[in-house]
Length: 548
Image (cartoon, rainbow, N blue to C red):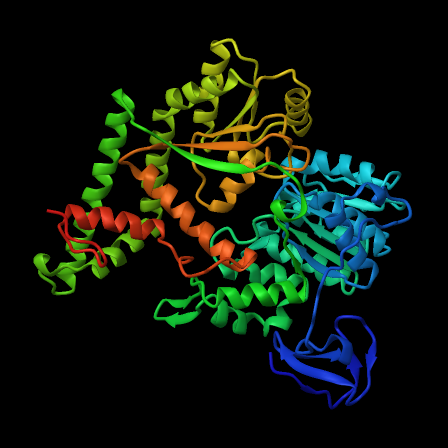
């Protein structure tokens, strides 16, 4: 963002301090001129760094129980930091860190925005780390004024819009946003609702939490960083989009799906206010290993998957030939660029998405018996957590394990939060042998570290979803090496999806962890499916020899 010295007096939008003429800077933002004081000049070099501390003291909290890596963040807040993106790996205690940090900042009215599945757990954590604080957990869509004396309001994303006016009237001075990748889409209603609260908090304490801040691509960081006031230090939205998301204008609009200059972005994020520590750096947690378990489908399930895949390829081949005809290209001259362009277009549409989703479901159902067999072999040595994507797959695995005599609990979307918590407590307390869980319903904010063996019966769309699931088990308190078994059906879309997850993991690691970005671009699912289609059409694939 380009700023100039302010010619006219005004009020700093960051700290509400009056800025006399020439005492700060100004720029046009969202169609109006705004002013910053010299201290909050968005182009002023910012250096955010954590100091090593063993412990901290914060009145009215149990800060003395924090681990050193958590205490370091609280100490930064005590030194004046008010906007932090806490991106520690899942399982490193971000909830406790954020609550004690808010108290350290002197917060009197804190809004905590979370996924619905973890509201109950957040209420527990508030009482554990800041005992005695008056907490209100909002449920339902019927809004009412927030009573006097309430110090913490916990609300889930789904109902935030219904209660937004009441929250703003309450005049919050602190904001904690859990699983902040939920607000990656700046045009989404929930993102805009969270932004309004962040704006209302102003120069008060704000922290966004996510162990997986980039599910797919760097542009997903822009909205959260903007809420925190950190995006200006990276040049503003458009500078960020062009420099790090490869933003280019096409005839269809702006394409911001790229991933560029990732090493530089990593360095700058850590300087402006992102905190990222890995478990291996700050804890003595045992090793986490992900093992692919190739399996072969058989029987009716195999036939259903094969038929669905063949139908998808047939439709895509027809669409490619139609496009070639429209472009005046002979069938024998079709190249991989054309194949990829048409496949990408077809898969991004509602029909293509429905086909892929139906095929994923068939794959999941076809693997139920194989997942059950793997879980049973692991249960001989201890408790197990199994994950799947589709409800029918979760229920099928749970039913089979229950019929085999195992004590089984399930976690699914739509469950009553108290019932869900009883299931978690039962597993952690030893009353259940195995939990079979939906990745979406249980991939965030819960602890299942009594187990050290994880079975992924179905893969999520992203590496972030996979990591979140595994890290329900691999987190503070785990004292055994954790192994996650990915059950992958060979010679099917399952293998392509596994490759896509690995590619997305490369992008996230380059930005968040500073790993070598040379291979970070990876291949999208559309590229991988385009290769399958190209081989069926005997179209040469760049970098591959044409199969005989």
